[in-house]
Image (cartoon, rainbow, N blue to C red; front, side):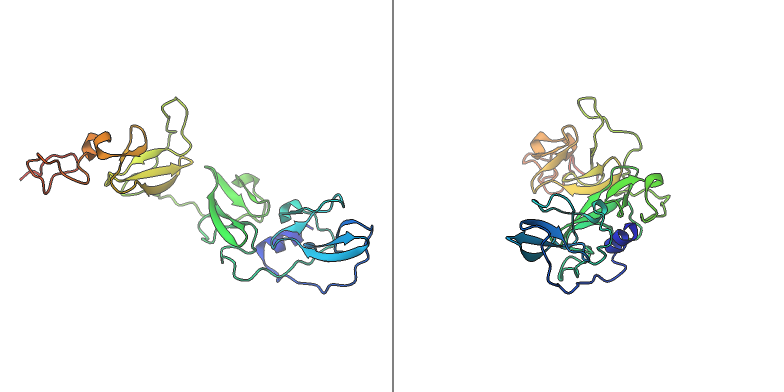
Amino acid sequence: MKELVIIFLFAISAAIKVELTDYVCEEPHGYFPDPEQCDLYYECKNGVATPKLCPDGLLFLLGEAISVKCDYPFNIDCGSREFVQEPEPNIDPKCYRANGYFNHEDATVCDRFYNCVNGVAYELPCAAGLIFDEAIGTCVREEQASSYAKRCVKSSEKANIDGFLCPEEETIGPHGQPLAHPRFPHPKSCQRFITCYFGKDIRELGCGEGEVFDDRTTKCVLPKDGPLDCSCWYNCKEDSACPENCRSDCSCPVL
């Protein structure tokens, strides 16, 4: 069963859609698995069976016949039910199946993954120090990962934005607690700022037009309410000695 699930997840082997045969209901009413196909089940009403498929990427969970539940492959033991339906067409190429948790397509990225929902891929990060293990659908420490988890060569060069590096130490917030996603001023722009997601995944984000980033509140504000060195980021003051070319802090360039 373990190998079957891994094959299903990694799409190493083509999925097979079996021919439906006349299914005889075990009981007059309920939901029952197909004996060969793990994502195929039958709804029985008054002894009449109607074949139904789980959403692409999910498998039928054996359990109470009065209810039906489809779940991710890493939560299902298919036993001898070794076949699955063909993948849905026209889904995001990042998704092996319409639904599921899958590796990042970049071979050098192990700490990000995709949650595919109805054929749409949503990129998600792992917490600091973890890698994604597709076989169990979650992020784990590398030493705890299964043999099927993707391993990436760690780069010795730390990612930066215009020379800014996420600090090694925790960033403490105004209430004395470490921040999960601290924000920092951009080294070259008052409108933009930098977020260190989980303290390490560096991202460049921006405020709306007409706003600047205030590192004291870590929020976007109007220039008059922000840092002094950004008060003239968009426009010089009317009484400025250099109204056409003042600096972001409203001072005039040195001639």
